[in-house]
Amino acid sequence: MNKKETIGTSPRPAVMSEEPQGKIIALALLLAFLWGGNSLAIKVGLQDFPPMALAFFRFVIGLVVIGGWALFRRIPLRLRRGELPRLLLLTTIFILQIITLNTGTLYTSASRSTIFINVYPFFTALFAHLWIPSERLSVTKTLGIIVAFSGVFVVVAPKLGQGESSVIGDLIVLVSGCFLGLRVVVTKLLIQSIHPYRLLAWLLTLSLPVYVAISLLLERGEPMQLTLSAALALLYQGGVIAGFCFLAWTSILERYSASKLVVLFFATPLSGVLFSHLILGDELTLSLLGGAALVAAGIYLVNMRG
Image (cartoon, rainbow, N blue to C red; front, side):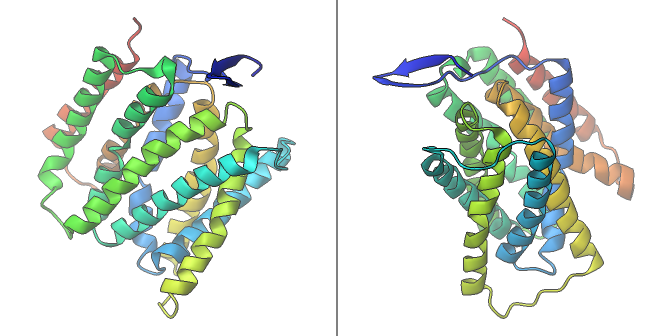
């Protein structure tokens, strides 16, 4: 990207924020549905691994996938001058988001964790409004975000009183959602000048020693075992989410509007309910159908052409 825009006296790469269209919207929805199983996989993994150890093994797998794909595509991963400070900032946000997500999920249910982490499109839209001139909040976009979130609430409200839960765990996951929204916008800004694959590879590389240090400090002596369920949960979190989803999401985020793309991820909690219906035979309720319709309406409003 050779275009430059000037802020004060310092030029920076112009931020691309194209309108997402058919194939990109379909890919983002696929990622949203896959991400719907992440909190469940974390909850399963936490039965056999403490939170920071789980994060470490998850992102080792993710780094293998991302690094392998970058080498296959012959994308240089060596850091360039001036990139390290920006990557350290993003890594700090990333680490805080993962710590709060894993810790919060430990103290609440998987379904509630999925609900509270997926308020992050609100935070993404807010931070994008503040820092990306082409992504200001309009009345229609704000209405669409509210309608889409209302659809999620319609689906999950009957389930909020079910299963194990903790207000503290819910609040910690909500903080994680705030960090995630911030991470999306900072990533959007950085990948205008840093290749997405290099950014992801270094993001995971820089974060791994922190998880090891925290685990050795706070989780020493806690039981760990690699059961079949834990292995499958790690493969899903690491290979599918931290590998494939991270790569695909960062690649489309480089070019397309962050605030419009993330609204598609209001479909993530719905996918958890849908998978429960398809795999476990849970009842397909009117609240699910009505909530899905509201989410679709919200996505339409946010992505509606002027």
